[in-house]
Image (cartoon, rainbow, N blue to C red; front, side, top):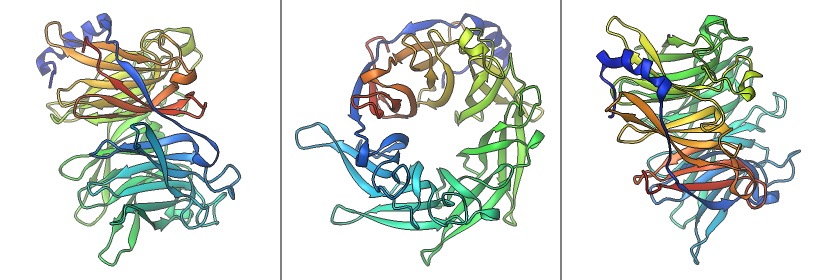
Length: 423
């Protein structure tokens, strides 16, 4: 990976203020415009299979029995004439399968798992939510199985799934009282699934709104909490945590870093490992950005790109790699990806040259020890979409994602950014 050696870290901190910017000139291709009505709108999670087909969930659409329709799972793939065609794989009914899906995962066998935010058991307001699995059949169709209906109370509600481990266990977060909790859903040989709450956040320095982001080879879960931690921010500035499994089935939580608010970051939103023990991430707020759009926030600042590196004496040391400032690089970054060469891709949900969000690529410059960024695409709303999120990379570093707003029908779109000549 293109990384600065540990002993030069202090030089990188000093040099960050002089980060360079280049226009990479990536070309946006609108792959599909969401249609609204029964075909759905308000795109949420999205995944790609090995053949390049796109799958996702739409918060509404489909069954009209829900107050805003119940939502769908869709597939978008090339049709007979080459254009991308949408197929509805499952329409939620607001029954045991839930309604209003917000998250989606795919395992190595092509099975799809979707988390429905409402519907299911009615002991919660608008239903407690459910997890369903869609499995491809030999005849080309899909079989839907309800894996688990949440029941509220200690078992939580409104699930969002974020991880699958090598054993096929699902992990995510759920509402569970004053603060959310992390759950594990495990399959058995009989075909049933068992729900287990592995950690309940306590608020304050312990954090809240926790999100399991990735798992290492030892089965430790790393995640972020956008609430709690350092009290310099209203409600806390957020933190990065690790959950470690014990031999007795219990999990132990360790706080790795608590954000301090401006000029440090605040409200961490996405983290990824680099394979060398370091963690890279973005915060939605905080940093040193002084654009007027960001000064109305609490805490102030347009967000940061950061690195956490293991310290020789234990714990982690944070380095802010980039401070967002709205005009060119956007603000409110919500996701990042890392390619095999160690380059980082970030989507900022708002701002940028055209005002409706931007996708950036950060590359480590070994000659001067700083992270340069290139503008891959600045969204302008309208038919080209806006509010980019849910980025995916293919083996050629084409960037795929969702535009939550705009598109040809005004209901959002799927896009591809192909590398420009300068990349």
